[in-house]
Image (cartoon, rainbow, N blue to C red):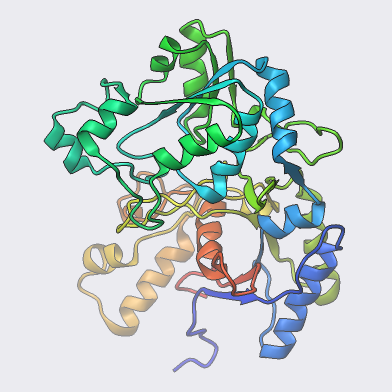
Length: 399
């Protein structure tokens, strides 16, 4: 066997770091943690390795927090403090409930319009089978809370055991606002209740805003329009507002990190200065993948990666080895087959879009693919690895 041939492809390593606090020098901490891990575990950094940092510690180091009262003040200033239609939120205690508390404290009444049978990221209120059995058309039918209970009863989330309808209704009322709950999937349905709307969908928000504005709504704002500037010295996110926020305490949220391009460039430079290797660096949040059991699409952040170095721009440009083996080189085997496939890989030029030998490869953004890998590697619990080192991702069969 050729001793120069590498027998391992992509490797993803969780890197343990100190607990990050506001004001910490994250660039130095991340760089030193990766370098120390390499020394401790006996591996070397290489060009095109990827260092990925979870958005959570970036926002924490930035001190990018806001309180429920900050949200309430912003909502009241932008909507006038009367009745607001809050539409298409996701079902989440961590992601949305604390935002809803702030929204409710800034209004007299909240008309909460929930999409059904599930929210935007796949959390189910009710199963499609029950929708079919009831003869309801979720594309057109608007249900009152009474009708929803009459047909479906009390439905709890498969994983959390929470009845989000009751949970959100009580949360609004506990904040001193009146709550009315309706169920619909057409944005314009909310206009029968109010013409001041806060749409809380994430990836479809631009379309929702367009539809409502064209239908004559008086005020249309999204979660990305709330907390876009400091409120009494609070944190903020100029681009994404409340999108990508997480619960920090019972009365405070951690916002999605602000501009962090300087951070990734600084880490890239520190690693180059220490090793002479040009690594790529990115900040990542939720991965973009779907759970087959719960049907939940993980991505509750507005993007997988809010900042990354230039080497992570673009999509994979790969050939499908099994296609080449089964078609172009079906009469070859052993070293002859290996040599033929290796030569085809080396000879590939330009975009392979439309090439039959690339069918079945994944034409997604590199940052979405790598960010998903990193999210699965780091987890969201107590692993203590908010930094991930990915090696060999840009290798192919010829390396």
